[in-house]
Image 1 (cartoon, rainbow, N blue to C red):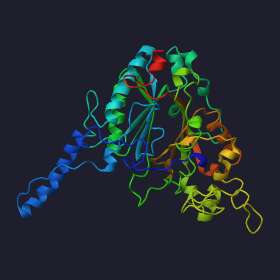
Image 2: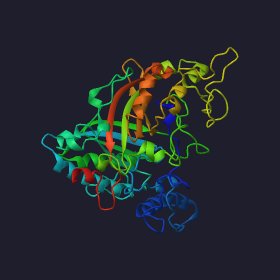
Image 3: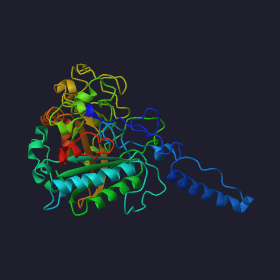
Image 4: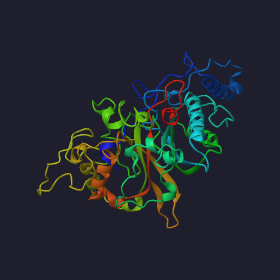
Length: 428
């Protein structure tokens, strides 16, 4: 769980928040906002009316900022990459059905894109809408699509498979379940409302029809925007601040590190990115037996505020050479935050955008909980792989985590108006 690329939370709809947009109606009121808020207001007034007599219902008010936040489907890049962490998420992989090929895949991506565009705008699904998201606004919903290694063989597009999509090398911390790894197609869904996210998941699953079947699905969550008194970095299930050193879109080299250039190869991946997906179980019973000081030594940062053990606040540059009274390093040599620094890995950097998960309790009483690790980079061989290899050689955190599933997906650039995601690959 490389510290060098963790994600800062931002409140959707707040000024300057990536992906935040006003509601689709120019007046600032969507049909669903009007219906939803009017219904809620009427319920309250009805209760009061018994005591004070009839009162006319006031004009409807707009949704709260959480409901009205909107990300755009069309654009240079797909949504769900640079937006802030979302409160609820689903990761799901599909395999093409036997006999399904390039034509069926193109029809499927066309359906998925049309559905994603409508749902991200706060509208109903194109057909057979379940009504699950009724009364809610877009809630910063994002839907992101990617292609796995075997997709290209199944569709006769082997010559278009990117070299960067070669399988990841094995790592010593891997305990991978193959049934929950890889996949022909990958979909990432995120929203700041759990019902909105679930609604999108069901629509995508239904749209798959006979063309593809679910290979695996994982469900995650993050802190709800507005839950803290001020915007701040998220915490993971170990209680650590997890979002301090993520590359930021304002960085001069952000696009170079995260996105395939417009002139890159293959051409259909222009402005796209590569997503590494790992289900990382946290061994919480063992972790929580450690003292606070021992936990901080493992990470290299204070648990309370994320500041480096060398001093300062969360954003203070870590002093790797600072020694304690006994001559030892204040930030241990095997501390997670020291090992994952880009300047210790040839400049390797990735944009982490994870979800936490909790899938219940095992038969022995241990929690099945941890991190749905999703990281983005222009080339995983220059982003994820060198950092993970370094972690394999002596990260103190490795004793408290286990990588249980893995996937690597090519995520093409955003669809232009009138296009569907992947059209340049499937119809090129």
